Length: 362
Image 1 (cartoon, one colour):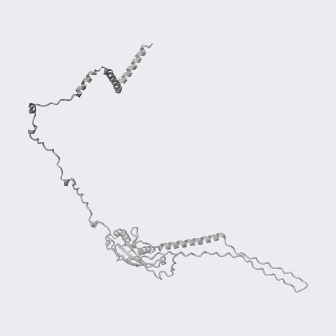
Image 2: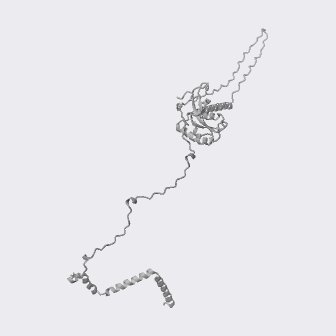
Image 3: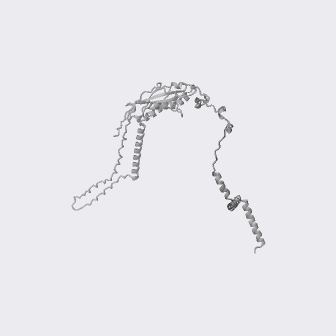
């Protein structure tokens, strides 16, 4: 049998479950919906069906036409005699003119920048130089480096033994005595000392090193007489002048008008013909720009070194022109100056007395 305590526990558990269900709105809505549908299903057979059937003819009956009598028609208002109704026009926004549709308001003028006067800008003027025509350098020829004769080693002398003189027998005229004469011993030949292998190896290494030095020197000579296109065109001369112009302007300062420089006013120097260039047998010149101090000496400090303006067509002449222009001394003027120096290199038999022309390589 079920005790009262179990009944109380069961009722309390069911009460808690019911409270939890009632706290959930979805569960309450589902229970209410099921209850309403159940009541409707139970009450549907009890509804009267005669009332529903009686309404069907009323719904299908048509409405009869009603005609008005003349008295009733006179009571209707006559709209033809009414004055026309004047409605105020709508307030439409005014359209702008067609010309104003695509016109934009002018932009404000920016304030004019305060530019410095043209005289304050320190810009190099165009090169006012008289550029004489320079003949193109002759086509470079490839020279064969003469080969030194191969060293020959003297054969070591072999020891040649001396011939032994034949022994002479002396016979006594006496018939009864026979004398025996001793034959002298032949002297031994002294062999000459043969060269040691170490000495032979050292001699060969020295000859090989001398040969390498000769080839290296010959290559350096050919590299010096190679063509050089520096300063050979008008644009190249303008570039060289523009690079040197600012340095010259800083050097002369107020002592000289830098704009008066002209290649027509050059100092001519007869340069010393370089011995390495004798193989070219060419006469040429180069123009170098130099900076001179108040005592007439050429400045060679960093940033003020001589600058090649117009080249000669060969590397060796360009280098010699810069070096010889740097050692030239001008007449003192007690002020800093910028000068152009033209170094002339004249080929002559006196400059290259024993120069042999190398045969070009085939």
